[in-house]
Length: 254
Ligand code: CO8
Image 1 (cartoon, protein in one colour):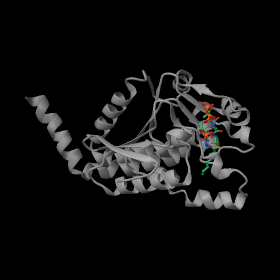
Image 2 (cartoon, rainbow, N blue to C red):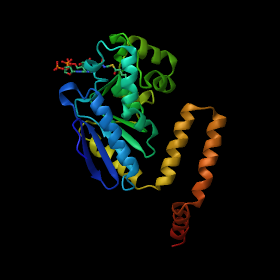
Image 3 (cartoon, protein in one colour):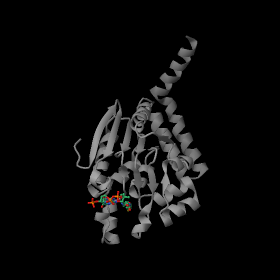
């Protein structure tokens, strides 16, 4: 896969790594990048050999948000057309395999929103998260207001959205935005190790777990429990479940 704004790597069996690569603009998300992200994810969705995807940036920046040079002076109608053409957001929100996001440096605006759409978020010490759209006279438009409020609660979300309050990695860990804070020199290896573990697990069960946890964030307990039951039952008909349970019992008899 050859892209202008992304580097694609294969750091381990079953794992694809997407590196945002617009170093001179702090990886600001322009239309090309978002289209290429959509195209990479669509290809990984179809490729049975890929079982987990890492999205990352550079040591200095995950992404500094949407590309302001593309947004300056445009009308609401033009923005709507741009949003609808941005296949990356759609592809990420419907991607069925596990995604791990490794944030070093800054994750601002749309960059933070991109990270929030991944399943597992890891940050390196000193990484900075913010929704600074208010400084540009707008608000987050790729899920930031909704996802942040659900994770950190109303008052702090209001500070971030209405006043551009930022948060460093350690606070993001404390608030449940990221699940680990790792030394900058170690984050890449630890992210790859985690993705490798996910890629090695029963793929249908991993996807089922992802769908259920995502539902938990977006629906009532009753609806979520219904989906969990509907998703849990068919897993008993998979070869993985039959083989893995039998293997467990055989091993304990040895
Ligand atoms: N867009 C375009 N270019 C950018 C961006 C950006 N978001 N961020 C940085 N750059 C460019 C700068 O213009 C500059 O370019 P050049 O060298 O050609 O002048 C280069 O990157 C370096 O930037 P600075 O000189 O400003 O470097 P500093 O180290 O002083 O500061 C910062 C780095 C803190 C990242 C600073 O550039 C900054 O504040 N950037 C803007 C951050 C921001 O406001 N992000 C939010 C954007 S709005 C958004 O994300 C809305 C998302 C909606 C998505 C909806 C889709 C559905």
